[in-house]
Image (cartoon, rainbow, N blue to C red; front, side):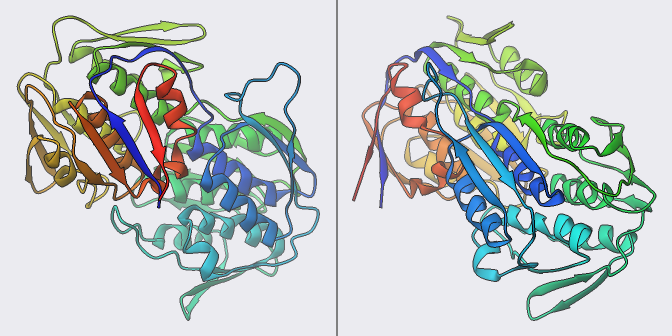
Length: 429
């Protein structure tokens, strides 16, 4: 099993290209199920989750072609996918597939909308907490679907097609919003989606669906209005830059006292995060081609923050911020309001010398003068990268186990950091 080995204490300096957003690329790939024509996606990141979803979609009959590199194209440039679901050959998503990637459950809505039936395995929980699918099912029922749960599977039927209606999500959910949009675009009549997620990745998918011929109003707000159409066409769309990767590398630069240019990053996708980092003493300059991030000479100050749905501070950056605040001067308060088990990185950070006290859903992080390298173990995707951030600042050697989590959400992270001066490598075996 691969591990990541870091010799800490090096200041990051250089340029890091920001990849396409995983959390947009996956639902965009799934949207290909909604049309017989070709959906061309640009700036698709090279990630294990993308590869796995490609196999899952292939099982449903989606033909995927990865366009080769063009002259002058760098390794850092995203991939171009051409996806064509001329026929959906299988309306069942089996447990062995859905259990490997929770996002694959989202094929439920487009398959049902297009074929009138779908049988999808329940995904179960995950390491960072349970994420029930109730809202996905009630959404489809509101649009006329008949839902039965049997043997760990969702059996959904709408033999006469889905019908527009009113969908009110009980809480903000990115996945349920994706499913509601994909069901509504082919439903007869109008659909109102209330309490919709406002995340940039949701807006990115909605904008792509509009290019495909969907009629969606209110994009970027909590109320979406969808006028159903008979069919969607092919389109071309570029995946937006990954705001979580942007925030992660900004924090890596800050903890090492470095200066990096995040090429392709967009400030509008994570304004709350950037404001928080500025309040802690990090210098951030927004330019037309990306963000320049540097830590000033005064060190890091503590923060008080709650994770929230967009436009608030994202839960997917909580572990990274916790690692950063381990080196702040004072005590920070980080409250996790989205997932109940998302502090599993705390005990591993403590092995590096961090001082963190957990009180229910809140971590009290007291900064220390320095961290010391140690052997640690990753528990999930974001926890993995928080340990890398801490390891970059720690004196001595840090070895991180179970790094297969990283490959799900961070493209070539060792290479990007190494180009900025980090002493980091992947060790096999």
